[in-house]
Image 1: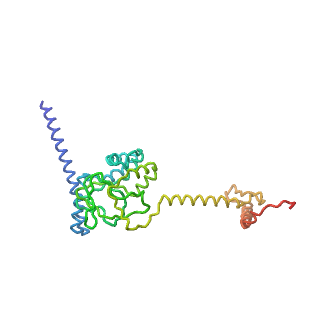
Image 2 (image 1 turned 30 degrees about the vertical axis):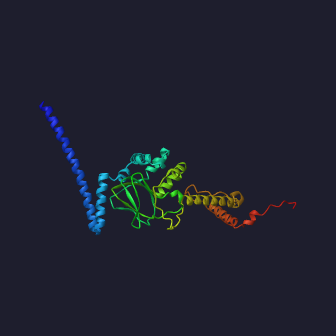
Image 3 (image 1 turned 90 degrees about the vertical axis):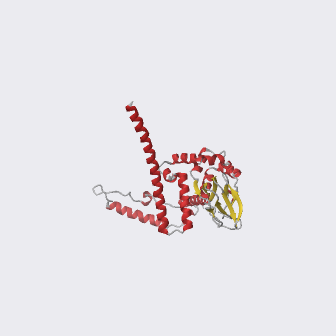
Length: 314
């Protein structure tokens, strides 16, 4: 009984000490990172309003992630495993949004790899008026307000979407309103270029996405013109077309290029001295005469090779 009691005593207090040590290590990491942030603020002389926003964001992000940088963790795994992890982390968004319904597993894996999660404390401005609309935002938690000229245009909550549909416009738009967080918010964002890449790889998904995507608030300002961005896929197609044209030109001109053979030149092939592995004098003279003949042959005009052959009777 004494041995059993000793084992139970060691087990209980061993687990308690391990829990305390784990809690202490998490607290120590938090204070270490906070000290680094404050040192950064002090070194760069960040003003107080911005300092408060930095510290508040850090505290909110830490409570959400426990100080674990998911991007840093994923880098240590192969792409196939990264896709599975990202698919698991974004499963709620992909299952709840009608725009992603009916997508193939490969398409969902490609999409999940391109989503990024952002956090915002209350009062933080996510989008400023006039900003370039670089992507679509999906609200996972919290609420935001849409403000224009100090007037609230709308309030968005969980599962709402704001931004613009990149399939409807050839150029990148600018924001017509400010988007400000009312509560602690977690948002999933996918960049415009990343979304277009997936739509280009899965054209069957593009049609379904454009038909089912419902943006709660379109931020695009039609009064502000933006410079049209050149489609990189169109650029690649033009480049490949140009390469094909160049290949056709080379193939066409190669039929007029005539390289005389050694029999036509009346010379012997280049030989090497067996002892020194160097060209023999006779072969060197033959090579020189061959080079001269090729040079003289290359000076013939394009018309000489293209003039029609005449029969003796003509």
